[in-house]
Length: 229
Image (tube, rainbow, N blue to C red; front, side):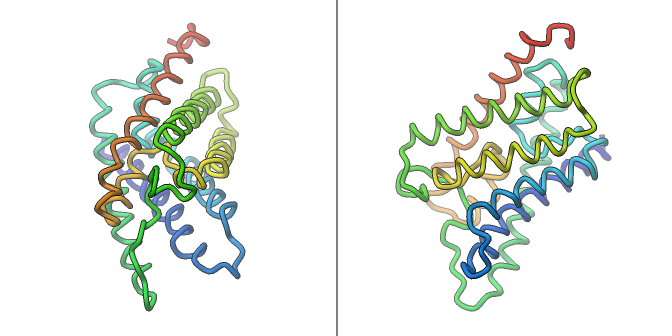
């Protein structure tokens, strides 16, 4: 179990540090041309690389919603849910803390939203709570559908990391203007604790919606792959 927790910690840490770091640091310099597409690719690359690096140890969840989606699909033990989620959240908080140390080294640095997720006035495009919630549920549902499919016994497991990373990139291309893209409660928690205030107040939605989408995907997987149980 210790090895598995270590793998989850490393994968989640890089996801938050690399993905949110690209938004906070690289995207802060418009002349570099990274933009939304660059940030989306950064999130996808972190997941892709860490799936191949440590995914064979822990399953490469790096996300409480993924853990719960695997459980709902019948492919993950209930007794391991809490250790996985605690590790993922601790890793996300640690990554956000390290990212703050790096980002705050720039003169005139202002914490602001710190790549946090938000709806309403905290949404990049001022999208409503309903819009953000529906987007998060739908995107997490399809994210888990891809993950469960490519990692199933009959799936293309050799290319699982590529498919999962590209799916996460696509999701970010859709959702960054809407709510900065979560589909991952741990990723949302780390930056929100640094940004504080209203971002923490809205954190509940970025736990609820991804979990709902992930569990629905797990249940649909059970229906579509009855022999996999």
